Image (cartoon, rainbow, N blue to C red; front, side, top):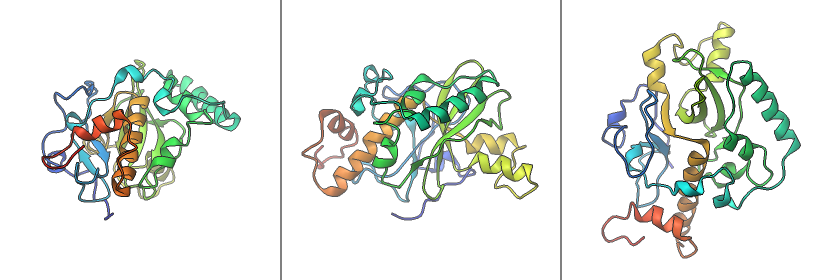
Length: 256
């Protein structure tokens, strides 16, 4: 794969064409105040990608069966046993968020503390993304809201966060910025990659991509599994859910 070329200032309408918000095919676009885009790599001939990642309009994505997204992660084989070390990490994070009047989504806690689940995204990622949970990071654009980093690309081309609001709303965003680094640099009087005091710059750097953690995880897992199958040249073992997802993109002359 080539180098990713995604920056906070790249106009969204210039990436893969079209606006980033609008009516979709079953994709829940909540009015959260951010532009939206799904940051991902190619699905072979079905969905090309010029670089390591591209931003795809959320309304162009295949719909997911939301009846499967119950917090039990049955689509991933169900849950296992709690991992004590992970429970400790999430308990500390929850305590720090509680001090700010915020709570972690239950699906996020279940996933990140489970022996069968918590490395699932790392294991399937074709771009070597890895789980890296941060402490609460203040939103640079909304007083009282916080970010929690949970997944990052190996070269930090893109970083995914939970975005938590005092209203109880929680969704997933992504950014090319590591806000833990940004706040640390400012605190230490060092040069940061962005101006945390510029709301326009920060709004452009944070993009909404999923209404819940489980929906993000499910789509990420499906797409990365499809990439492996397509590049392995064998689609025979794909279950119906995966075939339906690919069929959404099938161009004329290419079977799904």
